[in-house]
Length: 362
Image (cartoon, rainbow, N blue to C red; front, side, top):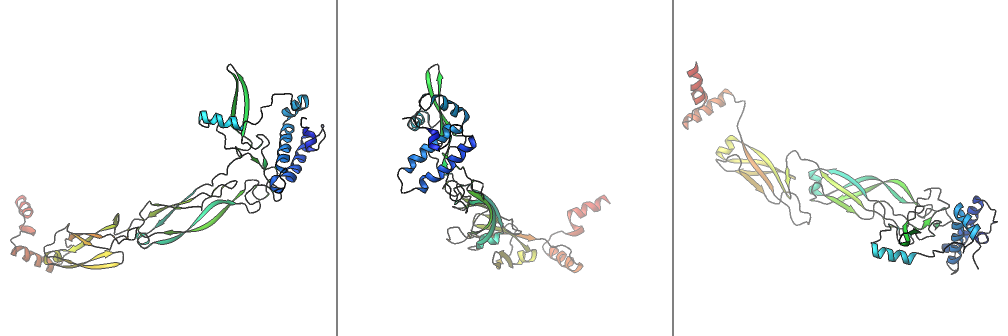
């Protein structure tokens, strides 16, 4: 016998749309499979209630049902098998989600942090404040008010797809598209949670402590799995991505695990030999300078650079020596240098080439 949708919902044939909706909500809560886990027939009753409401909630569908009943128009039946066949030929071109609606993965969160070169060398922890979506504690992420459950979508009857048969020159053609009402999930919340308004998630601000490993380079991105936004309908949580910016250092330039710097050497030390201080991340280190050292000579300090990420040693400090010409000399210092130049047969001051040219013009 054809189903009597009015009898299924327990309403009169002259019932208003609001009365039909209230009846459906009451029966859906009462016969939902999640609330009747030990009753194997609850799923079938719940489906029958959904079909009845689908037929009577839409004015045009209700009008056709009142005129023709269940058998008055072609019964398109369950298109799930045909939909799978359609997808196998056309690569899922229908655009619909899988039947029943799989959970949706939560959003990823991206943040930047800035650290010093010293922090990058030693490793450091930083607190990062983020705004994210977390599962609503009121409804446990279902989106439905406590004591109620999400129901099968009224438009697609839980399939996530809307199927239509159209007459064309080549005959009847079936098309499938994502259900607009449920977004392809196959589920619908009729009595939404008052806290999250049916979304199943709420926005919150929290602080995460990020551990930055020693040796990290500028621009490196770290992934913290499962600390992004909460998923929908049981979907997995997104990830948290942190981009590390290492601030420029006033002394060192970095090249991988090596650190480069420039060290000034007094002219007298460069000529006679001596020692200078070379900076490192742990303080300065005294380095010998050979007599006659010229600008551009490179001095390397092993294992004083940046640590390697794998923990296997450190790079080098590469110091370029720059011989410094003295300025603001006293008269005594000038006289000493002049005598030194004379001893080396070097012309300086007014006896230089430029001095003689100047004298010739006068």
